[in-house]
Length: 545
Ligand SMILES: Nc1nc2c(ncn2[C@@H]2O[C@H](COP(=O)(O)OP(=O)(O)OP(=O)(O)O)[C@@H](O)[C@H]2O)c(=O)[nH]1
Ligand SMILES: [Mg+2]
Image (cartoon, rainbow, N blue to C red; front, side, top):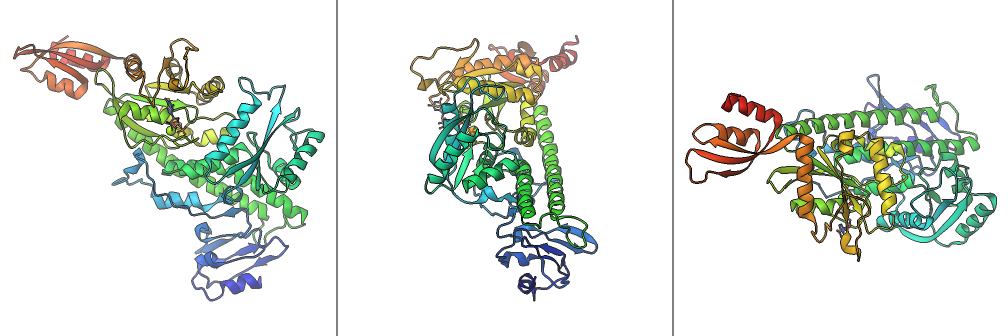
């Protein structure tokens, strides 16, 4: 009490710090009406495991602005990365938009609460892959070695993270807290404890429940991560746009909840976790849970505002009559490289990195008939990711649902290519992509340049190399056929009277490809891509039929 009170002394204003709670049993109530709210920047609290603060002003209860709040070893930490990079996404143009969501507002939410385990710098990682040999959890179409290679790839994607050692250990009981049987667990624990210099263990499972995470951490004496945590960390480092940042913040809420449960369980062991906070009628756990709930609602509301804006932009695109093609596939399969090759958009930056693209971006390209299409670059998929993560990105993936055609890019040189395909189709199924789109998928086998003798593995697939620009003309042709089919547009040759407004009308309402007047001043043959509805209007207006 005295430490905190002394630290705060002398800083002015009308706010009051209502309570603070210390892990070593102190329960204090402070009432200092003359305290400045951003004191916490300067505070260093040597052994506070939790500080819960909320302020009251004119009867309103407000969450403390955590940008100015830091707890030395608390559940949350603030973090301020600077990201200089921007992506040309639709959201960039906020000017004149009354409902615009400011960068500051989003950054504040993004930086506000970060699960501490994610923040703690660089890691020397020991990877454990539980190999389930039978039962419903057994993975088909892949092997433990390939899964381990993917796990190592995830770690190596993170700058300054290194893999120190890896172990594949078989288990019959992956759902148990310790995941492995007694003997294997003991062998593993000895190996981990004997490996010098490791700072974390990455258990290659979808999600570890909080009690399991706590127990493993205690047994191994270092931080323990699951796939969810590692992937979120990659996302956090790669996020550029407002929407991606908010989606990540939303996906982190379950992690924050788990950490909270672990912290409170630790406090309970010390005899202090379930105490009521004086005057509030709530326990420490309840206060934090409430704050998290409030945060979740705020993020969801902001995402909804962005979603509405995205919806508006999408309908504007539709009005301009540009068909859209969503390019999706497993992470690192070459989606961005392909769009760059199809559109010549130099702004696109393909990278040999998992989850390089986190933002949906749209790029215009031309088809053989000179029809303009918009290619939508999307976030890559990964096997064994919890629904929460996919759900938080579902607003972004709405673009996929609303496109006219899908291209499924596969890295055909990858040893797990069949497994990756099964995962992508599974995610699409869960996203409830309409049948008409599922049936329109163009499957592209990318990176054929890396295979000495390519043999098609399924009918109707197109071999290409996005990097070497091979097979792209065939792909454009196939996209055009698909678009014509899915949009109900037709390619027609019309005899047009050049003395009437017909040609001008066609330029406005359809996509004119060619005008051939054959030396005749009055009549031209015009090749046009036109929707059934527009052609009906044309006939009514100019042909009286
Ligand atoms: N050899 C070869 N490499 C390719 C080809 N296409 C893409 N790549 C490489 O594969 C890596 C990943 O490419 P990206 O286009 O970033 O892949 P992505 O699917 O957009 O990846 P995420 O956005 O991370 O999901 C890069 O190093 C590319 O140069 C190809 O046809 N041949
Ligand atoms: Mg990409």
